[in-house]
Every structure is written in structure tokens, then in C-alpha cells.
Length: 267
Image 1 (spheres, one colour):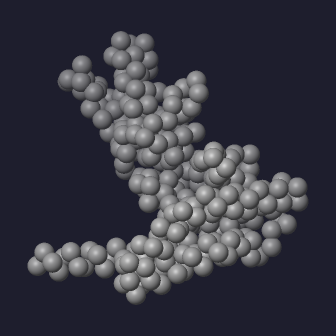
Image 2 (cartoon, one colour):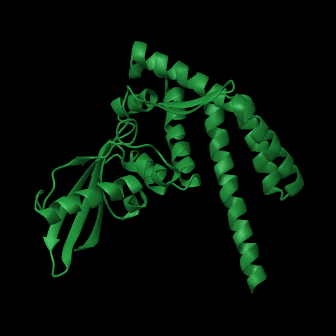
Image 3 (tube, helix red, strand yellow):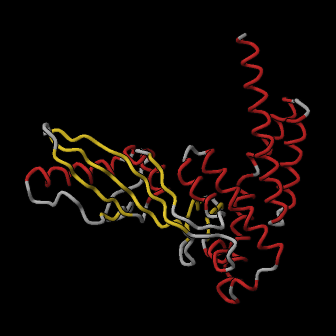
């Protein structure tokens, strides 16, 4: 029984990575990074054939080629960014728009792979043409030391009577002058940095029940560039201008995401 479960799990993982490889390959080809798309296709083929030795070799080649891939992706970002800033979103032809659209899906998949599902889901919902607010019952933000400190500090003020039971919007910022990113904060920061935290306190016998909400405007900004890596002759960044262009063209649809959870605060 255990061997059957293990075999089923292995098969599921193989198909999962196969689909991811095909998606990344297709996106690379759309971005005119032909060699990377072809390499990922080869890796997908040998994985589909269950040739694990060749898969390991192809994977090693892929890993060694990552610096070149990152540079070419960044160069393509440069091209799209310059085109959009100088000529506007209408300058993108149909194939370029499709390539950016699929890049959004690839970035979302990347979010799942780095164990940041909230920002991945936010990214995918930008493709929902309704553009309606999305609500989630989740306390994932409590995984951030920064968020916990904000709530703790405000709770102490409430207990001392120096802050109202219902807070105003508390900006969530990470970076110089506020806090620094950490591995524990990264998942939370990716999803809600730039949003606002709202706290509502209800008195109980032993303290307070705190109703928490984070609201974040999910959209791409033309002026924002997210640096991921830059050193040793290799660079990788995301220029949100290329995605904001698809917002202007109504291919992506901004919305507000709301995260709700409840805490107990005891005196």
C-alpha cells in the first residue's frame, strides 16, 4: 500500500514539474530566448520518458546556464520597458502582449515554488476580468515579525488607554527606516507590502478580541522595478512597467485584496 502511494506521489510530482517546464519553455520562446525554451523542452522530454539520468544531466546544464538566462531576461525587460516608456502601451504588438501575459502566469507559478502562495494567487487574480475585490480568511501575516510587532505595540497602547479601540490605517512597509526583509517576513512582504493594517478591539473578560484586516491594492506600477539579483556579472529584475502596460490595455485587472483574521489579547 505504501509503495503504491509513493508511486502515485512520484508520478504526480513528475507531471507537476513537466507542466511547469512546458509553461516556462513556452514563455521563454515567446520572449525570444530560443535556447532556453529549447533546453526546457529537452528537459521536459527526458522527464516524460522517465530517463532520470538524462534528466539530471539536463537539469545540471540548466542550472549552470541560469546566469546567462537571467541576463537575457533582464535584457528583454530593458527592451519592453524602454518601448513602453517612450511609445506607450499601444506600441506592443500582439505577440509581445501575449508573451507578457504568459510571463504573469510564470511569475505566479514561481511564487508557489518559493512557498509564497498568497502573492502567487494575487498575481493570478489580476487576470480575472471582473476586477472585483477578493477576501481571504487567513492569518498568514502573523508569520511576519514586523506585523506581530505592530499589533503588539498598538495593543499595549489600547491597554494603556492611549489609542482608540478601532485603529486608523497602519501602513505596512518593509525596508530602510522601517524594518528589513528577513526570510520569515519575505512571504508576507511580497503579498502585502504597501497595504494597510486595520485593527478593531472588542473588550472581553480577560482582555480583548482583535479583529484584524489587511487591505492591499493589487496592481502593477509603471515606476516600480523589483531587483532580484545583481552581481558577479549577472542581473535579474522585474520591471512592472511591462505589466502595467497590459493593465492599460485591459488585459490585467487591478483589484483590492482583503485578509481577515482574529486574535485574542490577554491582559
